[in-house]
Image (tube, rainbow, N blue to C red; front, top):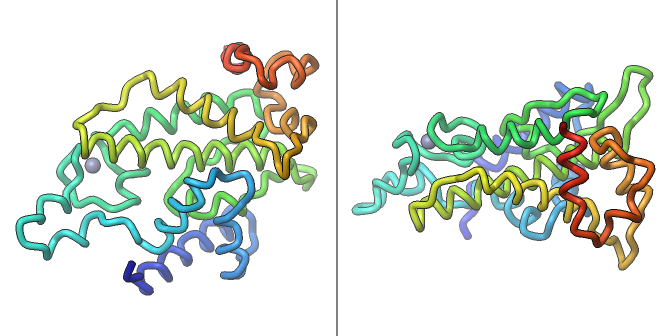
Length: 232
Ligand SMILES: [Zn+2]
């Protein structure tokens, strides 16, 4: 794959700018690249976000100068010139807004305010720390945020690819997929071990009956019911 260094620099710059805006400190390039491999990210997402940071996917301008393929430069939903940013956050006709609103709804109950993700937030979500008014870092909230943002972004990309290949529309069914994906990502063991306290912290405030968690849920089919109850 031929890398577009200028596009990469722009993307890194945007992520760093956004992190500086929300956290008040600009991360180094090294820290940024390391954050793309965060252990809370799925392997697929790690690849996706690395490719995205490098403008590695063939979208938009890549096709403009290729004879007979010019039409591929345009968004399958709205006909505008496509880019990863367009797909994830800008398109007016795709249902990415539906996915992001579901994500936000899932966050309901958390004391910390939801950060509406822009392209820079998505690129930098591995570095975002949720800090409360007392200056305390809420590790569980930060973890849920990066899981939700990464899972949502990847789902939107996947659905866009399905739309391009099969003409499929995004449906409400995806709501279940999103919740399940976030849940699976949050309960993935690290080095063969599941930190139940971490899982509990991650979903703290989102779920109503926290005291019964996580033993009752982990490995049980009732997990999604629990999330829904928390959203009610
Ligand atoms: Zn579009």
